[in-house]
Amino acid sequence: MTSPQRGDSFTHPDGRQRFFALVPCAGSGSRSGAAGPKQYESLAGRALVLWTLEALARVSELDGTLVVLSPGDDQFAALAAEGDAEAASACWRANVGGGTRAESVYAGLHDLLARGALPSDWVLVHDAARCLVHPDSIRRLIAACRDDAVGGLLAMPVPDTLKRSDAQARVAETVPRERIWAAQTPQMFRIGVLRDAIAAGFARRDLLITDEASAIEAAGLAPRLVRGDFDNLKVTWPEDFALAERLLLGRAQTSKAHA
Ligand code: C5P
Image (cartoon, rainbow, N blue to C red; front, side, top):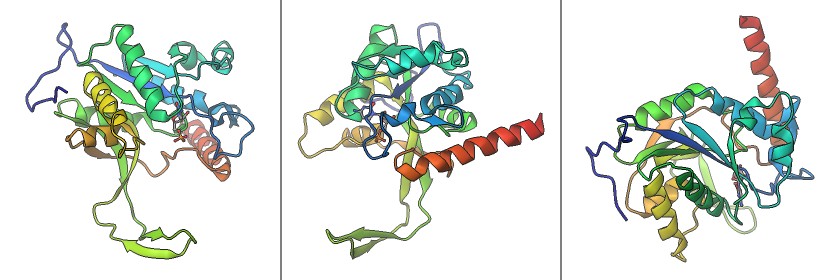
């Protein structure tokens, strides 16, 4: 695998760095309690994934966004055809999602390359299920990582005391929380480096790739941690939908009051 070296410029032939967003959107959302995939649940009047894509569309640094869908997904195309779904209709789509998030991301990276992205371009992988991400935080991630040798991710320092449980949900130990961060997305790496790191991770039986950074770390590189926001939550559990909806409606009211 080619590892980036400090000082490598990785600029596009026209002299500009390029940034692509890749949105894995091929999960079944089995923990969410929803009848169908959680990314299509209605939140504050529109499908969850539309909020996510709208946030990405407000980041002008991005050169394009690819949404990775399940092979049989026809819900996204129907959504994108609706009147208020400009951000969705402007995205590239690939029905190449796999059985795990890492497989969906890996297939999406190949699709981006087939569309003309270069291995040296940056990709920002962002969960469809993180519909509350702030465009300003994405810009902050890009600014912090664009000249970094490795790349990085949004994350939050963990304020709580951490407990590891035994199989009966009793405390087995207290885990020291110093320097513990909760990983969020987007996670930003060079396309070629991430593709190779995930491929190497797939070949290892001892590694479960739950985010892009874990594959990059397994390749011996240290991603940069960039502070995210407490509300960039991944809608996962049944109760998350009501919370996410309250936060979205609160934001709409705040922006109306400022208008
Ligand atoms: O299931 P989880 O919440 O970890 O999924 C995180 C993101 O990855 C979601 O946006 C989901 O749609 C996506 N995913 C995927 N392919 C899978 C599993 C999850 O694209 N096989």
